[in-house]
Image 1 (cartoon, one colour):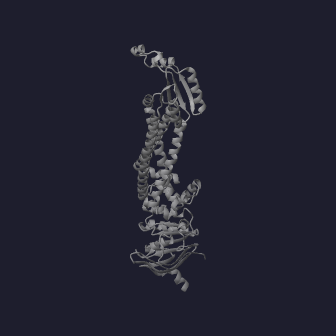
Image 2 (cartoon, rainbow over the protein chains, first blue to last red):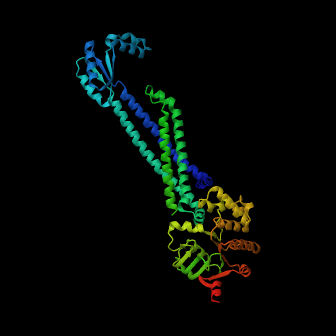
Image 3 (tube, rainbow over the protein chains, first blue to last red):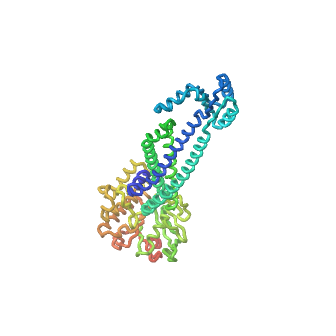
Length: 287
Length: 229
């Protein structure tokens, strides 16, 4: 009966139902987009963190034995995840591959002028500075390069993204609650006479309240499903462009478990949001 | 006999300072059929509203079955109202629901299972003679048929008491007769009935107890006269 009354209420005022669903849809569309963005940026940071972050270029006079000793020392520190040695010849091959379309550049370069190097990835991003500093002290090391600033910037940007997301979602959620409260309140006002009749023939307050509360929850669920679906559609549409833009960074495909997790959390939030809005309305208008 | 309704020194003063009822005393026994009569504004509807705790008296005590109306906690009001069948003066049918849905509403409120509710609603519609109109909306029915629908809704929970506020108010004489006869047949099966009316034709032709009101005062009670004799 409660469900029937709820359905009856929705059918009687479809435009209000549409408005309620639309405002929830907007909120959860933004929630989904930010969830995807935060997840993607975390993947990008992970990618940079797991790259051979420290590139060490050796002097020409460095002997292979000295290089091997340095490698053992680094491995012994326990701070490195992997160390890849790139010989002069390998460096030349990489150079040739990168400049294969420019024969002039290829002619000028030989293996002798390219330094051999280590590409080191660390277990933790915090160890980068320590390793870089210790390598700079080595006599066989010409130059140490590590993209610490890139990662720091990324972390900063992700933090800003999170803050903006939380602020925007909070504003939209408050908007949604207020608009839903007004819509459900308006519906209650329109049904005042019917509610009075129900009370006079013995309906309890909760018998009258439940259809409105469930109605709010249903708007929340439908809005969340549509918002999530729309965000997923937008993501699917933008994937080819983003994949090209991100090049080697393995952000796509986003795992379905993550998408379902977002969906589940959004449904719960939507039920809560719809429930709270309509509860506020029934408390306000059904004293 | 069991006392179903008892008003003891009941007064009702509205916020405007007007006394709607002054020092009203009367009681109704189980199975009685009582006409509550008086001109418009005499206090008939106020008494009914007090009996279902839609209003509280300014003074006095009211008992309906086992319910002490004045002391009744707010949360128990729905229980009281399910025990009383009320035929409202303005019918109070839900206009966007069918006659069947209107009649089934008290059953749904009382949590009667759907199959049982359907059976009981159809039985009562049969009893009041509008089963053929069960799928129509109130706007599609005549005045007499609407009145029967309102009575059906009042009866559907098999209450011990039915309060009918001017059920013949807007009807022609012939239809009014049918309605009163219907209420009489319900009364014959043991239901206590209190019917407000100012239709003198009906009063003349039904030898039932009459409680008279005028400007909020009790001016007539046949029962008292009988007891005094």
